[in-house]
Length: 364
Image (cartoon, rainbow, N blue to C red):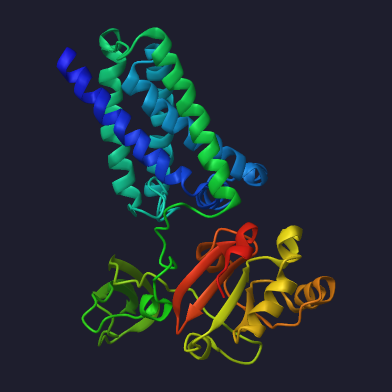
């Protein structure tokens, strides 16, 4: 039992630290995932949506700290009980998501590793087994260091986790796992290889044949049947290839300008998923950014999901005159974790990307 507890202790502790750190690296992204869970379509607890960011920070800091506590043997009973309660909750959440097909990606490992709902549920079941072993054998969990050193390590893990979470919120994730990271080409991220797997679908056609309803299944083609068509249902048997970037666009009211702007050599893109929610201190920096960019020969545009009224108010309030184009809100939240955020593109390749706090650090 002692050996089994030791193995479980290392496995659970390391996995909680890795999983927590990846989410702590991007707490804003995890808060978007929590908002998805809180929505009416999933758990229907929308009153928590305004508090999603605060909850996300508390959860991921607690996740990292519990992993550290377990490895160093700090307050073993509290740690194991907390781990058990947390994994029971996560297991319920991933099962609910998988069984009812509510959320396609649980966000357990942020953007670093995508898991299907059933993969997430399986992962949580495995963790639950290991944590139950720890629960039964908690008496074998002893501190690795002396009492003072263990307490210092525990306190440091909490302070450093909080500091890191705050730091990435005020700047950008330290490690960018998304398809818009520096060096990535957006056009290439949107392309689909010729040999990419195609989706496989099953069609269930219902006909009235001689007064009796019959269902005929095909892979898509309309069946040759002597009867009256009633309805058809489609079921996805196997998902096809989905490119890393699938919802990005640059559109005016009249046309799609994505290809045109992704072919520009010197382009500054100001991203604000919502002009109504834009950070005032960040917006105040856009006038000087606009003037400096044009002075250095850059074209500057904005991307937003907001409407025309908000665009005009933005221009008048902050004395800017570059054009804002439309893009999907979810895509813009993925492009940069800042409102506003700024990108430098060269023929679709991300050369620089900064939080509004760091606009002065752009090298134009």
